[in-house]
Length: 151
View 1 (cartoon, one colour):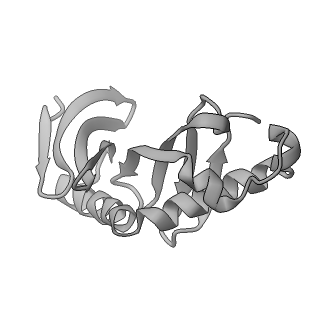
View 2 (cartoon, helix red, strand yellow; view 1 turned 180 degrees about the vertical axis):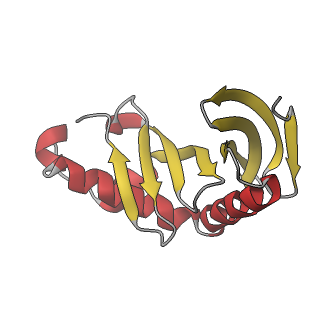
């Protein structure tokens, strides 16, 4: 039987959510900034030691927390590159990386025991749309995948 909860000094209390095949999922909340909490989804792969998996996940979350603005700007850039011509798509000029980044609010961080990637989920505000944007970064902080809600 899976553990009911995991306690981590950075990720906080992660409670058991589900098991799917060889992966057990935990969910909790952690401080991104003193005034901004984010949901943490942690995937523990079967065979990975819990402490080693948590250390890898903690490191990935701390990278995001240390420079959330970098990740938001990189996510905005990837989003705009995915659109090709944002001004035409949105029907008005002025869609810059900074403008898009200002309309993104990070609300969820997915981390795994199997690697140092992070998947970030942003709520989109105002003219950007009502859909969420998800961006995956590899362990070197390169954008690996953009789940663009408009494609």
